[in-house]
Amino acid sequence: MLVGYSLEIALKGMMLMDLGIDAYKEVEKKKKHHRLHELADFVPGMSTKDEAILRCLTYFVYWAGRYPDPGQGKEKETDEIFNISEKHRISAKDLFDLAGRLMAHAKTVAAKYS
Image 1 (cartoon, rainbow, N blue to C red):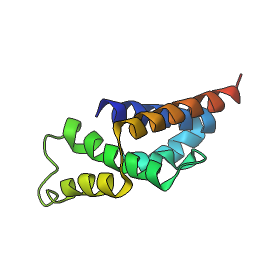
Image 2 (image 1 turned 45 degrees about the vertical axis):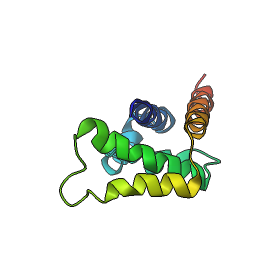
Image 3 (image 1 turned 120 degrees about the vertical axis):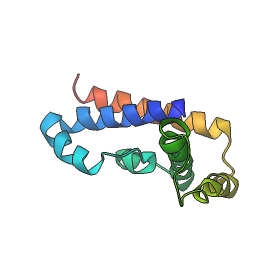
Image 4 (image 1 turned 120 degrees about the horizontal axis):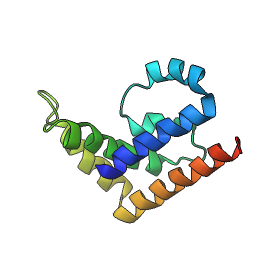
């Protein structure tokens, strides 16, 4: 959950730096959510497995921390975490490797302005 929160803030911060305040305000209207796999769509080199990892993290960002349950009618969505994880064979190492690569991209974004 905390990794997901951190990546959400970092991705939104990178978009803000890259686009500038005025352009970000327009984009933010569409990106006012916590779907990490969509927030990371500007990061180059994202694989299908990377997107799957971010989809799994999104579940934790939405209901494991902010909301104590997935919501009425969404209970079966919790199975999706396990299905995605099994299908893509996601491990903690994969998660932290992806987090490192996303954070490294922040250096690329920041380098444009130094």
